[in-house]
Length: 457
Image (cartoon, rainbow, N blue to C red):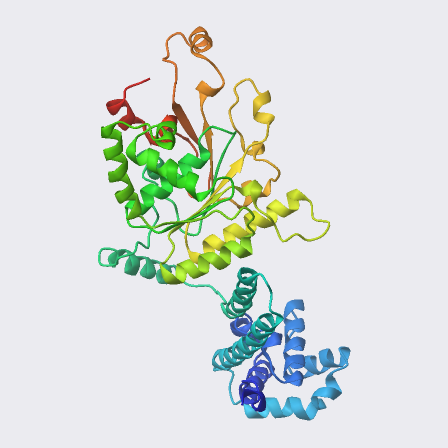
């Protein structure tokens, strides 16, 4: 039935767009972001709009004479019907006032045609009978997403519009079941410095091995979900069982080795059972696929976002991810593509994305071992694309108590003291936050809280 129908189009609207430009060339300023040459169904209208755009980009006037000349340069003047067709376009539009309305009609019908094309592509994917069902679904979702991407055009808005939206969001926060503002990390000083984890931001947590970067990210996810958020975790380094075990150790405050071998006291067993119940109520979704690409992640996130609404994404970790796999692409270029894509995911879903990253060995060669942005491994694009870069630094990993006391006789040995170094903060100052690291429990705590409960070890 559908094969007998013409694809959606509106020739009158197309002609009205071109006619509006011919009688008022300045109106292209109002419609350039609303419609593109590929949106026109009829070739001669597309050629005319192409000519108008070429003139616009050069800063030349747009009128019948200049468009005729431009069409002649592209050998399309006779194809459109010559001066008679241009005169027809001018005659059919009395005013250019409604140019934006016509442009939106042209864009809408073009989007419908692209949707039909996407349906054909999806049918082809289905008929191909791929053995990899997940890959086939990902390809189908990408086909639909491309249609949305071509129709979602953003333009300037006034500051009043933005502030009005902000007031609407914040005024409705108390009655909504889902938060629309920043996501709290659960660490007082960190939230104070960053204003919480901002939606649409890419945050990098980086450190050398065994300093707790994965633990910190999962602690943030756990704290956020305790406040009602929904967290999606991609873990390529550890299995979901390992992640769950670490969360359970942190929640029940039991040593992981004792939990793993079942050597628990009655009190510890009781805490474990209680913690299992508490963690089970949290909206933490884990994916431990060993190989992940950003398109695959984006596809899975869209499905989860549709079903539950995602508030936070954790990726552990960047260097284990795969890029598009373009032939000849080096790892630096590939990692740059990955970080740009993760930033796009953050903006697309309007959620903070926390990506864990390794640091290069250069940090080991410096006497103070203090991390710097240049230590980010394999790519400067990590620093460029990230909104926030946080390093974990621990003095007790690089010196023992005796060496410390020789150099700092008046200061206590900083055992289990973790400095969270905010080396980049697009929204505010850079500084350092101190947290207490209880490594045997896979748990970070606010320093003041840890001092009052466990003391300075």
